[in-house]
Length: 96
Image 1 (spheres, rainbow, N blue to C red):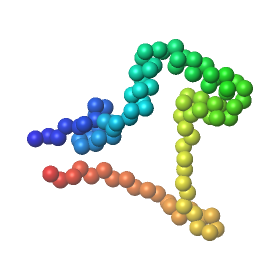
Image 2 (cartoon, rainbow, N blue to C red):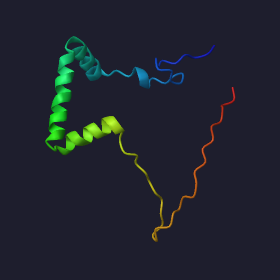
Image 3 (spheres, helix red, strand yellow):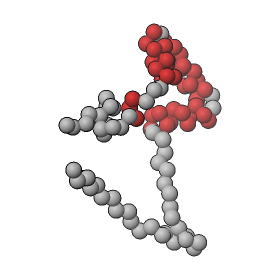
Image 4 (tube, rainbow, N blue to C red):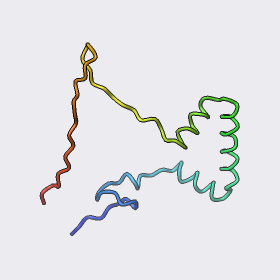
């Protein structure tokens, strides 16, 4: 019998990440559904703060519109020479 995913978004069978209890998110969604104008007001306040030059507001908007900056890691020796030439990733189907 094939195991079904607990994740409504189609995650791997047994993956419970999509079903984690998120009470704050649930409460926020309920509040927004009851009064959508509050979300608009909050968005306007963030935009106002960004316009005033508040760094946190500018960063918040950039992260939400352009996505967060990609983090990279380099592996170098003491002289700055790269220690990593390549990474090979193989996906192997487990035997049943």
